[in-house]
Length: 150
Image (cartoon, rainbow, N blue to C red):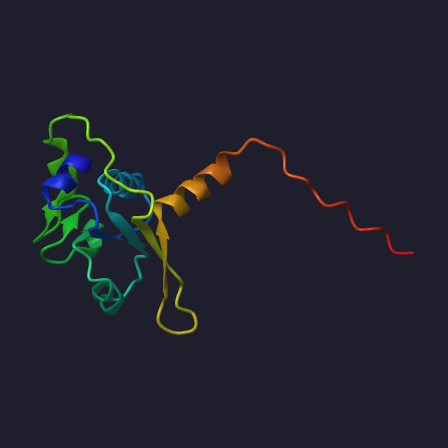
């Protein structure tokens, strides 16, 4: 997947917008994007064209049912490059990570319940902190249970 994205011009400092429901393919695109040192922004399937264009992404990856001309699609779709088919033809050459700790890693968008969704930007250092917190096996102190009321 990283080879196919690199062939499409994805590199450090680029932004890849992903407009698809969560799936193994979306995770593969995100991880490949990050391996290349680029930033990913995942949009829910109900994202508007206005929001998608607001990000000014360098590459748009979509679900086939959400495809738009010029995008890369996670499967065959009219007017799109099939990213999965392209990835299947790439040589299995290792690609070394290109990210630097302070580079932009991902953008998370709010649900937009109070208006236009807002983007929250996170660096690779932030991402490492999130992952480390999940993987940390140390027990967490739990507060004592509330005293029974008399």
